[in-house]
Length: 224
View 1 (tube, one colour):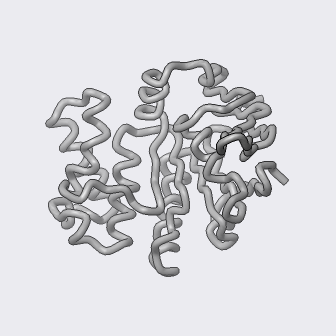
View 2: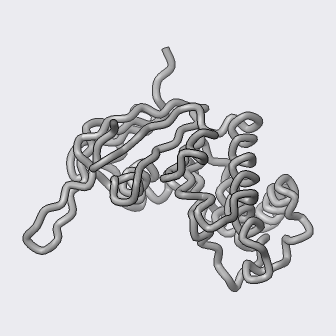
Protein backbone atom coordinates (compact mmCIF):
# COMPACT_ATOMS: atom_id res chain seq x y z
CA UNK A 1 0.00 0.00 0.00
CA UNK A 2 1.27 3.47 -0.91
CA UNK A 3 2.46 5.67 1.95
CA UNK A 4 1.22 9.26 2.25
CA UNK A 5 3.57 11.93 0.96
CA UNK A 6 2.37 14.26 3.72
CA UNK A 7 0.49 13.61 6.96
CA UNK A 8 -1.12 15.70 9.66
CA UNK A 9 -1.51 13.77 12.91
CA UNK A 10 -3.77 15.18 15.64
CA UNK A 11 -2.75 18.75 14.78
CA UNK A 12 -3.87 21.59 17.03
CA UNK A 13 -3.17 25.26 16.43
CA UNK A 14 -3.85 27.65 19.29
CA UNK A 15 -3.45 31.42 19.17
CA UNK A 16 -3.16 33.67 22.22
CA UNK A 17 -5.25 36.84 22.14
CA UNK A 18 -4.17 38.51 25.33
CA UNK A 19 -5.34 36.19 28.09
CA UNK A 20 -7.68 34.34 25.75
CA UNK A 21 -6.62 31.10 24.02
CA UNK A 22 -8.24 30.46 20.64
CA UNK A 23 -8.13 26.95 19.19
CA UNK A 24 -8.21 27.42 15.40
CA UNK A 25 -7.40 23.78 14.56
CA UNK A 26 -8.68 21.08 16.91
CA UNK A 27 -6.94 17.77 16.50
CA UNK A 28 -7.11 17.39 12.71
CA UNK A 29 -5.54 14.42 10.95
CA UNK A 30 -5.09 14.05 7.20
CA UNK A 31 -3.22 11.81 4.78
CA UNK A 32 -2.15 13.32 1.44
CA UNK A 33 -0.89 10.95 -1.25
CA UNK A 34 1.39 11.59 -4.20
CA UNK A 35 -0.81 12.50 -7.17
CA UNK A 36 -3.78 13.65 -5.07
CA UNK A 37 -6.00 16.45 -6.34
CA UNK A 38 -7.64 17.64 -3.14
CA UNK A 39 -9.73 20.59 -2.01
CA UNK A 40 -9.97 21.75 1.58
CA UNK A 41 -13.29 23.56 1.68
CA UNK A 42 -14.88 25.66 4.39
CA UNK A 43 -16.37 29.06 5.17
CA UNK A 44 -14.43 32.07 6.40
CA UNK A 45 -13.12 31.43 9.90
CA UNK A 46 -13.31 27.64 9.60
CA UNK A 47 -9.56 27.14 9.96
CA UNK A 48 -8.82 26.26 6.34
CA UNK A 49 -6.15 28.95 5.86
CA UNK A 50 -4.41 27.92 9.08
CA UNK A 51 -4.53 24.34 7.83
CA UNK A 52 -2.92 25.51 4.59
CA UNK A 53 -0.09 27.23 6.51
CA UNK A 54 0.56 24.00 8.41
CA UNK A 55 0.51 21.86 5.24
CA UNK A 56 2.83 24.32 3.48
CA UNK A 57 5.28 24.51 6.42
CA UNK A 58 4.57 28.22 6.78
CA UNK A 59 3.55 27.55 10.38
CA UNK A 60 4.00 24.76 12.92
CA UNK A 61 1.39 23.02 15.10
CA UNK A 62 0.87 23.92 18.73
CA UNK A 63 0.33 20.21 19.34
CA UNK A 64 0.49 17.18 17.08
CA UNK A 65 2.88 16.49 14.21
CA UNK A 66 3.34 16.93 10.47
CA UNK A 67 5.18 14.28 8.49
CA UNK A 68 6.72 14.67 5.03
CA UNK A 69 7.67 11.33 3.53
CA UNK A 70 7.62 9.80 7.04
CA UNK A 71 9.87 12.50 8.52
CA UNK A 72 8.51 14.62 11.37
CA UNK A 73 9.02 18.15 10.06
CA UNK A 74 7.38 19.66 13.15
CA UNK A 75 10.78 19.34 14.83
CA UNK A 76 12.78 20.98 12.01
CA UNK A 77 14.43 24.40 12.30
CA UNK A 78 12.99 27.37 10.42
CA UNK A 79 15.94 27.28 8.00
CA UNK A 80 15.35 23.63 7.20
CA UNK A 81 11.61 24.23 6.76
CA UNK A 82 12.36 27.09 4.36
CA UNK A 83 14.64 24.83 2.34
CA UNK A 84 11.94 22.14 2.13
CA UNK A 85 9.34 24.70 1.06
CA UNK A 86 11.62 25.91 -1.71
CA UNK A 87 12.16 22.43 -3.12
CA UNK A 88 8.96 20.56 -2.39
CA UNK A 89 6.07 23.04 -2.49
CA UNK A 90 4.88 25.61 -5.00
CA UNK A 91 2.46 28.28 -3.73
CA UNK A 92 -0.34 30.03 -5.62
CA UNK A 93 -2.15 32.79 -3.72
CA UNK A 94 -5.40 34.69 -4.20
CA UNK A 95 -3.55 38.02 -4.28
CA UNK A 96 -0.96 36.71 -6.83
CA UNK A 97 1.90 38.09 -4.66
CA UNK A 98 4.03 39.00 -7.67
CA UNK A 99 6.78 41.57 -7.15
CA UNK A 100 5.56 44.66 -9.05
CA UNK A 101 9.00 45.94 -10.06
CA UNK A 102 9.98 42.63 -11.70
CA UNK A 103 8.89 41.33 -15.09
CA UNK A 104 6.95 38.08 -15.43
CA UNK A 105 10.19 36.34 -16.40
CA UNK A 106 12.05 37.74 -13.39
CA UNK A 107 9.21 36.77 -11.02
CA UNK A 108 9.39 33.17 -12.25
CA UNK A 109 13.19 33.12 -12.00
CA UNK A 110 13.17 34.40 -8.42
CA UNK A 111 12.50 31.13 -6.51
CA UNK A 112 15.37 29.45 -8.35
CA UNK A 113 17.85 31.96 -6.92
CA UNK A 114 17.20 30.59 -3.43
CA UNK A 115 17.91 27.07 -4.68
CA UNK A 116 21.20 28.30 -6.17
CA UNK A 117 20.28 27.54 -9.79
CA UNK A 118 22.76 29.26 -12.13
CA UNK A 119 21.44 32.31 -13.99
CA UNK A 120 21.42 30.87 -17.51
CA UNK A 121 19.47 27.81 -16.37
CA UNK A 122 17.07 30.03 -14.40
CA UNK A 123 16.26 32.05 -17.49
CA UNK A 124 15.94 29.03 -19.77
CA UNK A 125 13.66 27.19 -17.35
CA UNK A 126 11.51 30.27 -16.66
CA UNK A 127 11.01 30.91 -20.38
CA UNK A 128 9.98 27.28 -20.91
CA UNK A 129 7.44 27.40 -18.09
CA UNK A 130 5.97 30.71 -19.28
CA UNK A 131 5.70 29.35 -22.81
CA UNK A 132 3.88 26.26 -21.54
CA UNK A 133 1.24 28.61 -20.07
CA UNK A 134 1.00 30.73 -23.25
CA UNK A 135 2.80 33.63 -21.60
CA UNK A 136 5.95 33.77 -23.72
CA UNK A 137 4.81 37.05 -25.32
CA UNK A 138 4.21 38.58 -21.88
CA UNK A 139 7.53 37.53 -20.34
CA UNK A 140 8.96 41.04 -20.25
CA UNK A 141 5.83 42.74 -18.92
CA UNK A 142 5.50 43.76 -15.30
CA UNK A 143 2.44 42.67 -13.24
CA UNK A 144 0.76 46.07 -13.62
CA UNK A 145 0.75 45.53 -17.38
CA UNK A 146 -0.99 42.15 -17.14
CA UNK A 147 -4.63 41.16 -16.66
CA UNK A 148 -5.70 39.35 -13.50
CA UNK A 149 -5.77 36.02 -15.32
CA UNK A 150 -2.31 36.60 -16.75
CA UNK A 151 -0.97 37.53 -13.33
CA UNK A 152 -2.35 34.32 -11.85
CA UNK A 153 -0.81 32.30 -14.68
CA UNK A 154 2.53 33.96 -13.91
CA UNK A 155 1.99 33.01 -10.26
CA UNK A 156 1.39 29.40 -11.32
CA UNK A 157 4.51 29.53 -13.48
CA UNK A 158 6.47 30.81 -10.48
CA UNK A 159 5.10 27.96 -8.35
CA UNK A 160 6.55 25.50 -10.88
CA UNK A 161 10.00 27.09 -10.99
CA UNK A 162 11.72 24.48 -8.82
CA UNK A 163 9.61 21.56 -10.09
CA UNK A 164 7.93 20.93 -6.72
CA UNK A 165 6.04 17.77 -5.83
CA UNK A 166 3.10 19.69 -4.34
CA UNK A 167 1.19 22.75 -5.60
CA UNK A 168 -0.70 24.50 -2.80
CA UNK A 169 -3.29 26.98 -4.08
CA UNK A 170 -5.04 29.31 -1.64
CA UNK A 171 -8.31 30.64 -3.14
CA UNK A 172 -6.58 30.76 -6.56
CA UNK A 173 -9.67 32.14 -8.36
CA UNK A 174 -10.84 34.51 -5.61
CA UNK A 175 -9.87 37.69 -7.48
CA UNK A 176 -10.90 36.50 -10.93
CA UNK A 177 -14.11 36.48 -12.96
CA UNK A 178 -15.88 33.15 -13.50
CA UNK A 179 -14.49 32.47 -16.98
CA UNK A 180 -10.90 33.29 -16.01
CA UNK A 181 -11.30 31.26 -12.82
CA UNK A 182 -12.34 28.21 -14.82
CA UNK A 183 -9.28 28.65 -17.04
CA UNK A 184 -7.01 28.72 -13.98
CA UNK A 185 -8.60 25.57 -12.56
CA UNK A 186 -8.17 23.88 -15.95
CA UNK A 187 -4.44 24.64 -15.77
CA UNK A 188 -4.22 23.08 -12.29
CA UNK A 189 -6.15 20.07 -13.57
CA UNK A 190 -3.71 19.67 -16.47
CA UNK A 191 -0.74 19.92 -14.10
CA UNK A 192 -2.27 17.09 -12.10
CA UNK A 193 -2.98 14.94 -15.14
CA UNK A 194 0.07 15.64 -17.31
CA UNK A 195 2.79 16.47 -14.78
CA UNK A 196 1.50 14.20 -11.98
CA UNK A 197 1.63 17.07 -9.50
CA UNK A 198 -0.07 16.76 -6.14
CA UNK A 199 -2.59 19.62 -6.05
CA UNK A 200 -4.16 20.99 -2.86
CA UNK A 201 -6.70 23.79 -3.27
CA UNK A 202 -8.03 25.78 -0.32
CA UNK A 203 -11.41 27.31 -1.13
CA UNK A 204 -14.84 28.32 0.13
CA UNK A 205 -16.35 27.76 -3.34
CA UNK A 206 -18.05 24.42 -4.07
CA UNK A 207 -17.72 24.98 -7.84
CA UNK A 208 -13.94 25.26 -7.50
CA UNK A 209 -13.81 22.29 -5.10
CA UNK A 210 -15.65 20.14 -7.66
CA UNK A 211 -12.58 20.22 -9.93
CA UNK A 212 -10.74 18.08 -7.41
CA UNK A 213 -11.00 14.33 -6.91
CA UNK A 214 -11.26 14.57 -3.14
CA UNK A 215 -12.98 17.20 -0.99
CA UNK A 216 -12.16 17.65 2.70
CA UNK A 217 -14.64 19.88 4.51
CA UNK A 218 -13.60 21.88 7.55
CA UNK A 219 -15.78 23.69 10.07
CA UNK A 220 -14.89 25.24 13.41
CA UNK A 221 -11.35 23.87 13.20
CA UNK A 222 -12.33 20.26 12.56
CA UNK A 223 -12.74 18.09 9.47
CA UNK A 224 -16.35 17.00 8.98
